[in-house]
Length: 134
Image 1 (tube, rainbow, N blue to C red):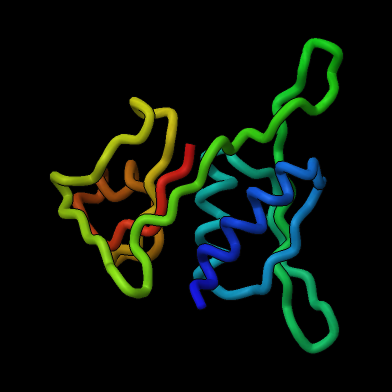
Image 2: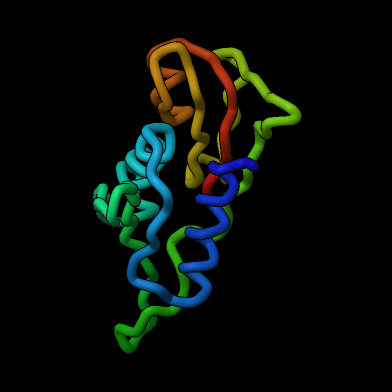
């Protein structure tokens, strides 16, 4: 099972149903990915919550508002999983893509941890391309 893809599916489903928060099974990798999404403004706060003997990552979803102040649609239009367990995709420092002319974000796993594509370019490192978010 691809747990990262499941996390992305839970986020998108939560946004379609206009949920305030989404609970995702916890792992450090998912926590780092959620931190990148929060830093880039795609989700609100994130917190680790104990649920019995297991931990859950609670993500606060963000929405655009219409002219009346009601939630209209989610900030995230699409999350596309690029590197999958059956087919890994890597990008060198010169090959890091720009998503939606800079409005989107690339999430990468590098030798310096899970970081955004912009941070990878600044640090001059390449790595595995996990996902595109816009």
